[in-house]
Image (tube, rainbow, N blue to C red; front, side):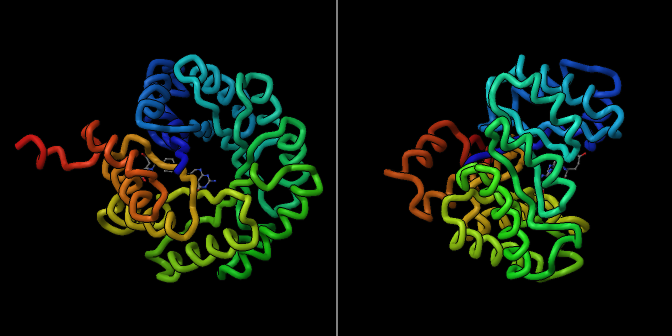
Length: 271
Ligand code: THG
């Protein structure tokens, strides 16, 4: 499993405040902690209005790069902000995201192609997010036609089936796992990624739902996730799931995590 650290996101209250006040230390601490927690990329989402986005993105990018040496995942739909950001990055970033929406294909796909970026592709188009796994596959199939024509290898694609809220549609989990299985089978070279938090919106004990959802999603073929890398229980669930699915040769990662005291409840271990 590869992890995209989600925390540098201006729609989060304290991050929004840090951006407005240009509190560099707050942002750099988030970058350092997430890499220590095992992030392979850092998502950078300014969460600010289009007129401010490029400036804020550049500020965040430079701070994250000073503090950490993992590649970034530029979370923006704004081609102009992305083009400006591409001038600042030290390593090829992931672009988050394209979709079947014509505006994204026209505005963002050329940037992805020009710089050879890995890219998250959302299972939606200008008609919205389809309600069934089959229709989400139809949408992403059209996106692959475009990305292949632009010379983007399937290995650079990170398909996001788009997690919706289980509280308003109890089929939401099954739609995601079904979509993941279809993508795995039709596009075996592509990666599968998603964000978790929408699944549990409005329900109690969200971390429990998110964690259990992640386990099932890995079994359905997900190999990358946008998560909080500093969530200890979530990380323990990832180690255990990979162990049980035969993705941890000689149980090496699991036993290493155990020795680093990453698996057991802190209380169980020290009381
Ligand atoms: N797919 C793709 N990109 C995405 C998402 C996705 N980018 C944004 C989002 N979803 C993933 N990022 C975050 C970042 C932070 C939080 C959740 C998702 C977060 N949420 C807190 C919570 O859920 O408890 C509440 C907010 C806060 O802390 O203020 O932190 O799905 N491609």
